[in-house]
Image 1 (tube, rainbow, N blue to C red):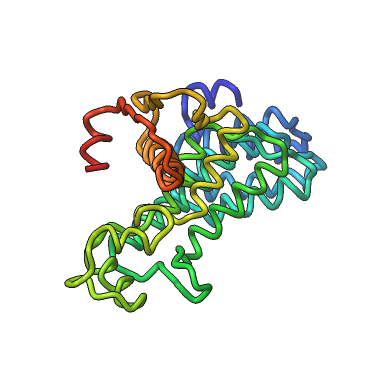
Image 2: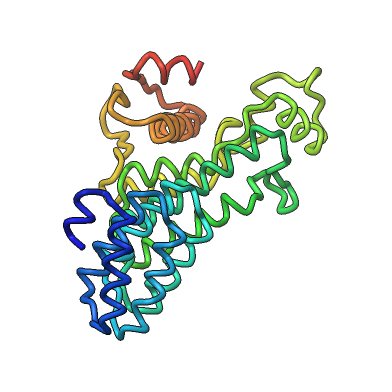
Length: 280
């Protein structure tokens, strides 16, 4: 089975599996993992899930490797239902999900959220009095991220960025105008600064993005914001887009309050040309 896996021959791997069953042999977890790997490498996720279901019939307990292989394949195939099923099964089997599982699930939520935004579907709500994103993919991404924190897994910067992406306000002009109308402000008469002040986040991110970023900073995943030095220097050249944007906006939010208090603070930003273009 290992040879079939290395040769990426899922058809031959299934032949070996049929022979094992015909001889009434009990395979090992490693044998089943090799078969599942061969199937996943051959884009046969559904068949791999059938083999996964067979394991309990053999009295075998899937291990973390089993779940990781299948989770990576579910992300590759953009099959969120399978990914969620695997997360639930892992928890039932007392297998601590790893970061690869959480990263894949959140990444699939982000893809769906971006698609909804690109189609111009409404994702905002102001029913609570404060405009925020009200979308099932964002809610699911936040739920999955919270589960990773509860599992005491230190998130990667990439995972944080994906969650922040699910908290980014739509950039389509039609959706922006609709939100402004819902808030009772005329986009023709209102000044840009007034429009931005309506949304805590400069009209770019849901306010929850900032608490999430600050939590990640406390874990050492992303840069922390310090105002002890003057001037304040922010270098985001090594951060991806969402982390860089929320980092800069977090600093700007704090500076706004300090300037209102009469403090003189100097701020220098070092960023990639792509990031600067987006921020402009």
